[in-house]
Amino acid sequence: MIATLRLSKQERIKLEKIKAALKMIRRRLRRSVDTAGARQLFDQFRATIHLYEDVATRTHNCTISSAYPDIQALRKLAIEAYIGLGSQAEPKLLTLKDYDHQRFGPFLGVSDEGSAAGEICRAALADPKCISFKTRAPLVIGLALDAERLGATGEVAVGPAEYQKIRLDAAQRILTTTNVGTRVNVRHYLNRRVVAVPPDTPRKAVAQAIRGINQAIQPFLDAPGERVRPLPVLLSFVGHPSVAWCERILRTILSRTNTLGRNSVILQVGLQQRVSGGRDGTCEVKRLIDLASACGVHDVAVEAAQRPDAERVVSQPGLLNYFSPTLLQDILKYASKRNVSLTPWKTVDTETTARNIWMGLSTARHMGLELGKYGLAPLTYEEQEAVIQRIQGWFGSWCAAPVHYIDLPQVDATTVYSVKNTVEGTNCWLDLVGRYGVPVVLIDTAQKSKGTRLMKRSPADAKGIFRLDEIQELTHRAQRLGVRVLWAGGLNAAQAHQLGGLGVFGLYVTSDAAERMAVTPDYDDDPMLPALKEPTFDKVLHVKILIEAGFLGAKLREVGLQSEAAKIRRLSCNLLTAKDVRVCNQARTFHVLRRLLVKSWRHYERCRVISSHRERRSSPCA
Image (cartoon, rainbow, N blue to C red; front, side, top):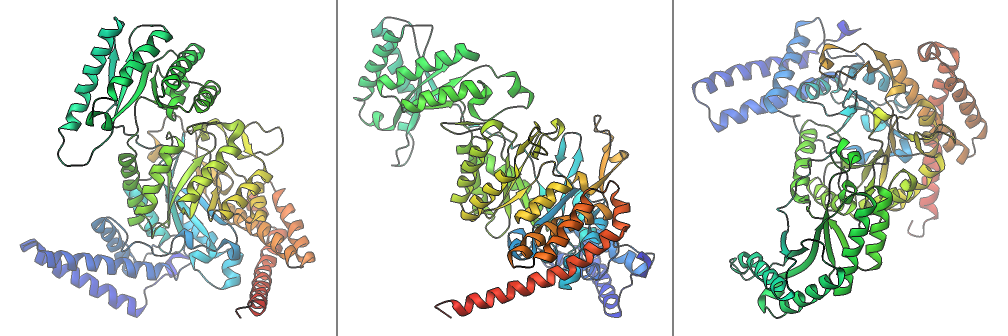
């Protein structure tokens, strides 16, 4: 029980030394704040956190608390240390990318804001793998608290209070991950310069356009330094002139700009137009594309009124703000055949957008988490690529995982990806992250409030997106690219068991690992939240065992232990049909399967070692 936790003699001595040192340092800093004193204070804060973690890692208790004064004093000092440092004692060197799923099976994450950290820790220590390997190492057990608040809209970011509680109660006993946001704070550059071409006589229209172009490029001509920077200038035809008139004017302007000397070197001429929505707008865009193609212009920028569907979710990627996926696909295909680049008038500042993501990920890293996930909606694939390249460069030694939301529409320069062709879109996205050596990614659903799910529960399931065989194909593709995929999105215990059998890198399960409970005062500001999901020891352990049963059942069949694999499969089916998890965990079937998994882990590890020795002996280099 909790009251049995006591500090050892050596730990009590360390605690008294820390308390004495802090008292002396605070007295010194009250007189005068200096660099040496500040360093000593933070050194003692780090020593406090180290001592607290050492105590935490040797207990099975739900929470690190006690009726004993020394434990209370240590916890109080640890809280002060976390607040004072604003972070963990030091960032983690070993992160989720160091988890060996080929040996230890799929990783499991359970979402919680920290209140169930102790229950998840208990489930980790009761896990068959922990018992079989005789270890409490988090990177062996492979169970994590995913630091997120579960609101009516789905998973949302945690704050300082939650981070502090998670660190206190998880304390080196389980892994910790988080998602810093589904959507990014999209920033735009200053809009590209638009030069109006009036509906006048050809001579006057051309003259006014040339004057506008010269005014636009003048600041770039006067800029200091020798480096010449290209300037995009967009021509916009005012009114509704005929296509023939526009083509004549455009060709004249282009011929005149080619004789501007140095001015022509920095000038990039494109077309811009505000268009209508719907099918009328697509016709207008196609006419603009035809004009650009006929005159050798490659850049066309458009703007229009935002679609209601896009406005309801703030914004969507690129031109999906203006056109439906079906209409936009038709336009992009049309532009691609004519070698024309079609973009929105506003250009996303990917550098600033990436820096906003970096801030959230840095907080997760400094708080000692082993993984930070970051969503990229509503960026296009080209914009995502620029952001991912920067983020991965900034977090080379840590694990920052980009997230692909399969229930949100995506777009690149030539194709729109929706639920209908999401497998194709996911393949393209995996190719994208593979180019930059991203070690871990998450594939998830974003619209939790609409009930969209990662996997279909039956062939007729309209809310599920992927079939099991599609996930298997995507997993194999990711492996070839050196990318390890985490899966999430409404997964239940049966699907977790199936993914365990596939040997995926990891997955997140929350609903089937949690009980519904009344909304607490902490969530009073969420008016549409009917109930909370609170992970429990029984349900977390239930899901974890089913994942391991799926993994070991498949692995034992591969090494020829058919009878043991069949027994695991039979017992797993009995667990999956149970309606009450708590009663099921007390039943004989559960305990038989749990003991069998402990033995199976040892058998699998022995077979794996023997196979490794044989490979080394047969290797020409051996």
